[in-house]
Picture (tube, rainbow, N blue to C red):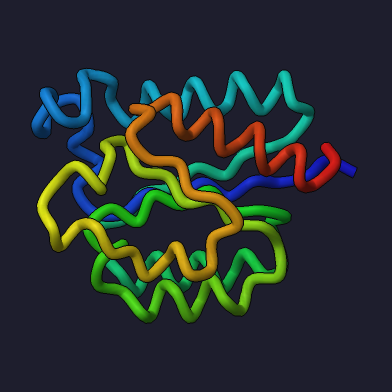
Length: 146
């Protein structure tokens, strides 16, 4: 049976490619999605790729994943540093979770150094650019035996 990876993206990632390209690069979120879909085929998994600027929507998707996904890759963006609600939802998800950040949050402003999500994540990838999504997918596939 094919394993399903849910890839969630938080606020402002819809502007990837135009938002602070010196920090986040020139690749768009559509480019990242295309790369993830291509890798999924190679890994023998399926992906469900989503983005929302709304915390509650991300929480709803994590809750729904309890019956539809085997693992989650999440870039919570700014909600990394503020959302106990996303942490709580992820805590109820039984599968593995990999947290991704395009930039190295530990080289940025002090308030970005703390992640609520990291307390639940099985792995954290930061500072690898959009390649971090692919690294996270490879790790999840390994953890899931895909």
